[in-house]
Image (cartoon, rainbow, N blue to C red; front, top):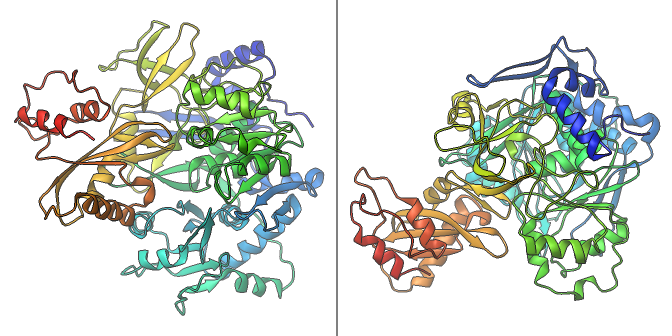
Length: 637
């Protein structure tokens, strides 16, 4: 079966894009008509960026799991929905057909219902990359509960903050998770997070690592035991809950420029349409293709391009538990060959780390099944792009460079594989429905084609966030208040003479480390928890593998017996409070920080020193103590 809204030529792209701008409501009504609705909408779009108010397909009723599973059963019931490749290559992989996935999701809906979960409840999911994670998400969506997946690398304190913010009374986790040669103790981390929290009613624990765990009577139950209870009652159909198009589907927490993570809320219908539309067009998915997205489902990429995007298209989604370098650096290529993957979607950080291993990992690997290569999470540098093209794609696979954010739901700017031109280091052209523009610091649109500025979007697309959970004003301030009537992405951008866009990085106090956004304030708060730290300032600097590294300037008043030991202690503090993903790469102890007379830290100066631009720091005359800059420069790592 062909997909009626797939763009197949460059001319087609330009025509479709023009219509999406000229008649957005008619355009998205046509796309949405291809999905299964319980009740048709009576208004396509209601929006106002000042409030902000964004609603799509008003009055429409549907359930996302009927669109991701049920509607495929007649034609694709026996086709693989999820192929799961375990961490250990010696362990056998699993395949779930659409029919099997349907059964397991309904089964787990009954488990959730038996444990008190109902429509509108928030369910925190903190699991490793196993099929049960996708099953848990889909079961929540089927019954109308709102899932909030937390990345398995976050600490107890980070989980605690998210649980409290979401008011999540139910948790789904595992005893532990495998990641490379590490066993990650997920359940014990949850236990630590729950100390002093009394509103959590149930913790459902799946067995994965057989790690001994503490099970609290009346609160904790085993996934497997709960499933057996359902099975003894015979196979029970669980009808999909009828949901409003604008009901929340999930909350996903992302770092901001303040210390508190913000819960981005995506609504059902708009997100479904957008994830599906971008999946089919960006990757040029064809029936029977195996789609291998290497992301963790704890991030938005896994939500959109392992679960909801591929499944809504009836695709086969390859889910990988491990890491690219274990047991050796040929693991990705082994997985591609083993499952005949056609699309590979990974991060520039992974590509750059694999480049360092040379040609040996490719020995004995054909990679002939690959048709499309993709990158996500951060801009890809030209050297990595060329290596990916020649070594992995053998010069015959189009490379898509996708730019998007947690808040955007799915891809906003990207070439379409083999359809629109690619340009190394450029995300290239906007998706239909996306209307980007560049503005200067005063918010004035830059009309010249070849220009640089701050990237904004002037019209909503179906996948745009609706709010930040429990704090709509924060949503307005973060995304819609900087420039009037515009969504501000927080990214700087270049545009070339052909209208191609190249993302140049964050312009706010947010870092992009290995494709993951981390707020500088959040890291500073964690560093300042160390008992010897007086004050800290964190900036990003160019990192060969991660793209951006974390550079911390710290004023320390403790005993300086062993500087390296103190650094390790501070790193441990950050790891405990946020997680290893946020630990500083460089720590420089400084006598003071460059501050204005009003007490504001001049991060611009610290950023330039971290980047090595110590001769061009700009005007320092407004600093309270300009001499402190010389001392910081002299101590640069």
